[in-house]
Amino acid sequence: MDQELILLQIAIILIAARLFAELATRLNVPAIIGELLAGVILGPSLLGWIEPNDVLKLLAELGIILLLFEVGLTTQLDKLIHSGSKAIIVALSGFILPFILGFFSSYYLFGLSLLASLFIGGTLTATSIGITVRVLSDLNKHNSIEGQIVLGAAVIDDLLGIFLLAVIYEFSRSGEVDFSNIITVVFYVSLFFLMAPLVAKMLSPAIKHLHRKTDIPGLIPVALVSMVLLFAYIAHISGAPDLLGGFVAGIALSRRFFLPMGAFIKADPNFTIDVHNHMKPIIQLFTPIFFVMVGLSLDLAAVDWSSLFIWIFSLTTLLIAVAGKMFGAFLIHEKNSTRIAIGMAMIPRGEVGLVFAEIGRASGILDATVYAGIILVIAYTTLTAPVWMKYFYHRQESAERKLTMRD
Image 1 (cartoon, helix red, strand yellow):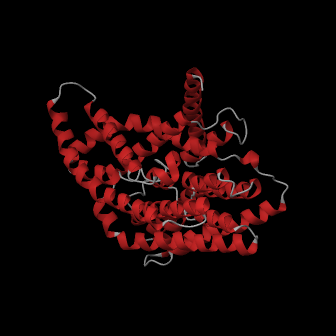
Image 2 (cartoon, helix red, strand yellow; image 1 turned 135 degrees about the vertical axis):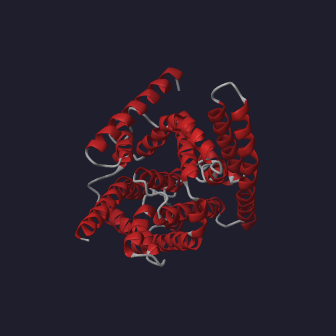
Image 3 (tube, one colour; image 1 turned 90 degrees about the vertical axis):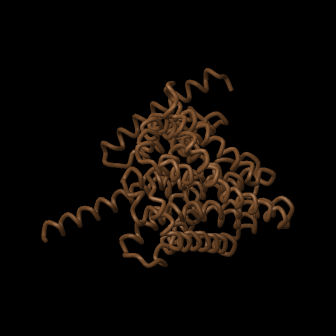
């Protein structure tokens, strides 16, 4: 692709993301919805001006890595650790139930093939941590009880999803599962989990020391962006490149290791403020590209809107997608409002669901009709969950204010 065209596309994406985010905010809708809609309008769903390419995917991945690094700076690690058991319950139930229901409905109710049903079930296990974290951050709820539970559960969910994707993909290629490959993937990812916090703890004091000694501005963003990209690269090579190639790189692993870096860097409150002030403009520049790219990937023009099968299939699958995540939230011991908030935050499938669907389509396992139905489910959960979350919190805050006024 011509360099000049890519530059033009980046400019259009940034301008459109900002314009639609401003419009969404004025309509009292989360800004992320405006950015997602900008991608839907610019992409194959409507205007067809921009198609996802490797350069845009790289910039989008950088955006979500930096966004989650920022979340790491403001995350209260003790709360995250304290919510561990609840996060595990939410993650496992929100992973197992949608997969089983999605598989059985596809295989027995709609008569799809074994592999297609497995891919559909796998798609429904996903939770888009990027979308969830952005909404919770915009609502200033990422350090709430539900925010910490969701953050931990979404990370676990995605890692489980990658292991599942590795198994299904291996099965689709050879008709059997080579457990030695799967064990290798689990070993390297687990090793990375153990080593990442140690490396972050060693590098963070060095960055702080150099920041105090240097007279040249810009050390913090250069050091931290390099550090984040290094972690992303190591995470990729620690994953399953032989099974899934670069397709899953970054989507599933590379952005999962913001917490150790953010946690250790924020040990010094003054240094944390410096880091945040230096990184904020860079994060605000790249993050919208990610959400526009999610919208670009939703090809709603491929949907045969007159097909009765698509409507029945997509509505059934949507019900499973929503109920499967909501049910898991009600298994933990919390008040109902917290459970509802957790369930809603786990619903968006976003880019992670698109990975499953796209691999199924590219492998010829999902035909055009089934793929279109899955895209509808992903689009609905991605575009509407942030709106419902904001509406829910608005109602909750209004009720609390009325209760306070009565007292």
